[in-house]
Image (cartoon, rainbow, N blue to C red):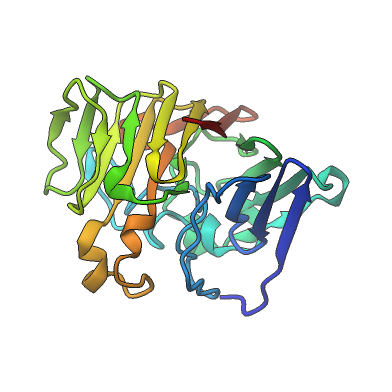
Length: 288
């Protein structure tokens, strides 16, 4: 794994972000005059998958999903987040940055688990727009001669004043899978917002309605829109993080919640040769 890391600042009068070339990883985003909206832990360990921010999950989710069963694909969340992406300087300025990645950036061993022919080929373009809103669009194109199937997500960690006061609106009544229980049993969200009390939450919701993350401690609402997906993943480790996650400090679980635009399991993306698919997550902040 690389030991050289470039951190880029994309900043203007409307907002600022820090982004690592390693993983094309948005580390933080702060709208002008406001609190940070994308969470970065107090300690950022470069040289392994980066905690916090917005990891790009590609080309498989978690340990992967294959033929109805969980498959042991490694690294967790795919190799895109542990690979140095290329910057397209011609599409980069103080409001945007464009990254690219292709099969040429992965070893044959990493490509082998992909659902495609013997020689899977693809390229990904990741556009990040920074200002009053943060817009992230990941476009993947199948450059091979066989169909390509992959999973993906924009694993956004939202910074909040105090998670125990937060409520997530827009998922009321939605079906979801509970990933904290073996077998991922199906559940239904009650007709009430999602709240967090220190219990581990790890859910795949079958909904992509616009979400509103009410953050009373910082007197704001974070608005989250997604396109190109049918699923929303919500995760927070709760108090378990204090003893089970070595690169988080005690109590740091209160500072964030992950809300991800995702395409995984039975909703994995399938591309015919030369076909492309775009996954977008757009974030904005409003006063309460």
